[in-house]
Image (cartoon, rainbow, N blue to C red; front, side, top):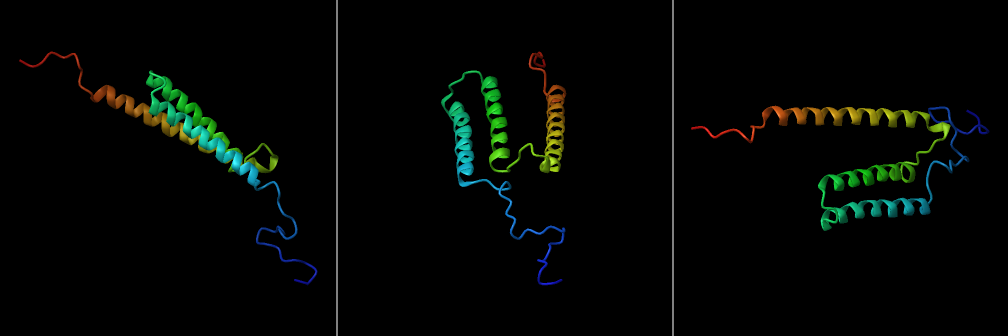
Length: 129
């Protein structure tokens, strides 16, 4: 290794003098993400605590919608995910994770449904004599 050639890390990439400005967000983007996260948490909390919507299933659906939006906010503002071609493996890992979570949740709900159906006593049975 000579003086004119700077050291190269184990992956063959020289990071000296080449700051990656797109990899990290600015203070402004972090604050926007934080404020959006607080709002997207406070609204469902208020919905549940105030009982603003009488139907619990509608409240649950609204909370799930807010959760989905908050996941997107976190991916954009904190994980810095975008549609650039450099993040192909990151997107593939995200898609794989989503598929695995959907399989696990669907399987769990399916098992729990059948447990309730098969194990719970029938409510309209006549009492024993």
